[in-house]
Amino acid sequence: MFQKILIANRGEIALRVLRACKELGIQTVVVHSTADSDAMHVRLADESVCIGPPPSRESYLNIHQIVAACEITGADAVHPGYGFLSENAKFADILAAHNITFIGPSGDHIRIMGDKIEAKRTAKRLGIPVVPGSDGAISEEKEAKRVAAEIGYPVIIKASAGGGGRGMKVAHTEADLEVALQTAKSEAGAAFGDDAVYIEKYLEKPRHIEVQVFGDGAGRGVHFGERDCSLQRRHQKVWEEANSPALNAEERSRIGGICARAIADLGYSGAGTIEFLYENGEFYFIEMNTRLQVEHPVTEAITGIDLVHEQIRVASGGGLSVRQEDIKFNGHAIECRINAEDPRTFTPSPGTITHFHTPGGLGIRVDSGVYSGYKIPPYYDSLIGKLIVHGRNRVECMMRLRRALDEFVVDGIKTTLPLFRDLVGNPDIANGDYDIHWLEKYLAKGE
Image (cartoon, rainbow, N blue to C red; front, side):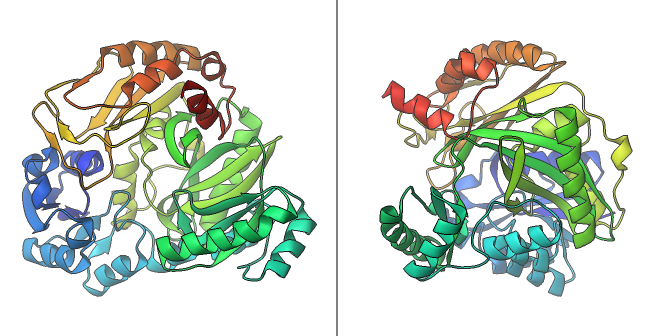
């Protein structure tokens, strides 16, 4: 087991990893920017190292400074959390060259899954169902029209190196295709420095289903069930559930088994999430995230397994702690992402939190690194906390969530709490009857 882990992140995920390390008896080091000197994870860590000024590129994305912090403190492993350098293959490679363990997959696997085109090819080879579309990048309008005609309109054009909805355009007819292609390429080049795009069939009313997987790097793989992340705004997840209200036990077992076998065949090490669009009983691969997900707590709630403990165990060479038959799913869990944003316009709302009170009681968990008097800096993602609620079934979970939202108090800034209080009382949400377009349509009606 590791002696000392450096946590290369901030906010609630840094605190989440720190707690896991303490439970395992592992010393912790956190890095931070000058803007995060008073952050909770900095206060609680065994050691902290300031690695630069507020801009991420000069601190949390500064590989040289993070490696130097490892060497200064004697950290023998790095946990990247999510975001920042968590899916940076170069970072994983550099750590390996310095004999520091990256708590995650190999640089090669990060590279494969970070390229959407190569990821789709790999998924297909591993037996994972994929969305019909082009076999590779599309650069010419003539080729785009041929592929679109073959798979049928509407189609969606996606950036190969994309994420967060950038470099994605839908074409409903051939007349739309030229503009969509050029716009997607332009956005992709500006956002990612790579204008490669590909085409897929655009599904009209799909759900976003993702499967949590783990590999030991030596040919074993398991799945921890699925999460439903269909409630999204501008391709950003807002509310996540486990298990999905749209799947039955047979579908859950089928897609989970496919993913676990694929991870084993790939020789993958650590945590990963295989994401699908799901429509009319069929799953279509869209991407794989080679890291811990923001929404991992709902999986922990229904399985009782600490996924960060599992990450650390696998990375240290201890292998998986469970077999597939050991993993049982109990009850239902929902996560709401609490952001420092205006609940109507979603404009960021940095500032000082004057009062912070979290809900409690059976089945309630709050992952947050903020506190009363904490000043939210304007430089980073607006997520300030996650409310995770677990119940014996979805009905109990929804009732418990309603109560928890009523208890949650954050004063001094605007947050998205009012949005969740509206959603929990909506009949479609109560019935689990929604798709990836539902939330944006709902928000449009309220404007």
